[in-house]
Length: 550
Image (cartoon, rainbow, N blue to C red; front, side, top):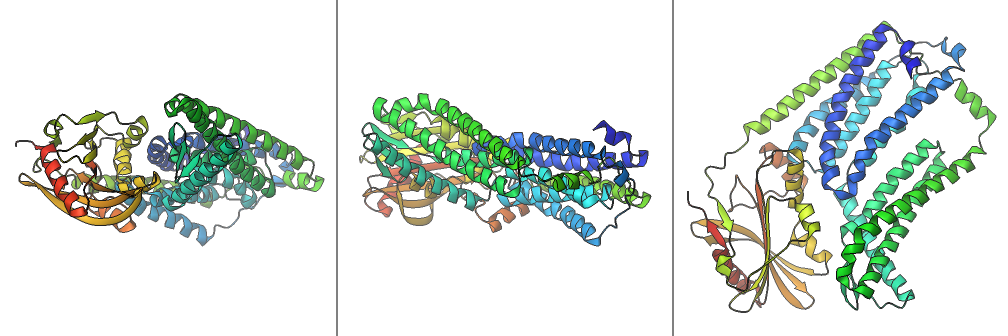
């Protein structure tokens, strides 16, 4: 790479410095924002490796270009300037302008997949177009195409659209459970499938989102694309590598689920916990190594098919080290880089000003707490499972079970988050809004029979809003009361859960960013109808809620 910098002029060095500074701030901001999602969503933990892999692929392309330059100095000396098109200006201008609303809405919705994808695409386009202006020569197009895949490779780290991901999770989970039940039958282990739950003689084994195979599915997609570029496979062989990765991820994940279910059938459901993580790591490593061997095999097959003409064609490409942009092109590139830097500062300052101006004081709202003291001696505090705690990442939490005087069985979840002071905390708060009984309970085999809408329950001089649901657990009714409150709006108004585009835009316009939050969910089995359930729920809530004195 040193040859590249030795062969360029001081003006070109200044242009590169401005370009790298401009691209650096955009990429660092994007990685910082996506990094919070990579940390919170376990299936996207692999995202932390993608920026380094992108940098490696870019470096690999530069190295190959520098080697070719030693064989094509004569051809490079004839390079002429290539005219800059108006389309490139419009593309850069559109991406830069779109960055402002994307950043504005992302601040209030840090896990909105649409803005995450838009942001990444905008930065990718800005990068490629700015390279176009900085390295403008008659042979620019072939050389710039070398960087298209390494730069666009970053997009595999962007969380997928929720609808696509949810569909894949449900599909993979059902296929995984069905295949596991079938394989267990081959080994003489009786097993029954109940939605995403496998029933064996010793109990039930739940196959949740973490075990659906979505993690290995997405990780193998990233790895297979990387191997395809690293080994310079052609398009057909890259597609074969990707398909092989999908097949391997499913087969290895099914093997893991089969192993864990076999352990549950032989040693009890409690024994699964000791095998869960070691089995996951082993299967992931085995999948990675197998896919690597497949990529190496495909590379060997492809090598034998290269023609001499193809080799000669690659040798006459002009190297990156021979940058011969005119003074006009150099000044244009520097001006664009400086403008992008200034625009970044303006957008970030404007977004910060808007949300700080809308920060709301909590002093006017009454505070309340949950206390089990009024529920009697039957109340049992239950330790919240680690997987749930890891998802919610709350500052306070409580799970409890008890029976009331009428014999009704109750279960309660309570979580509280203090106002966010970091991006990771804001992501955790917004992630909690995506959880609700209408999503979680059907995943464990229950049927949503009715959404009875929002009810209001008075407690002292306060009002508490809840959404009431009726589920069927087998043939038994289960009444569920669910609420999320944001601290500024209090308990009388349910929080904006950001479930559609309109609600996400409304959150941004309201400047909702760092608000504290409470989550309360209570389920009762016993009441025969919804009105009776509402009445007993109101009595229990009044026993639990303690309103703090001013």
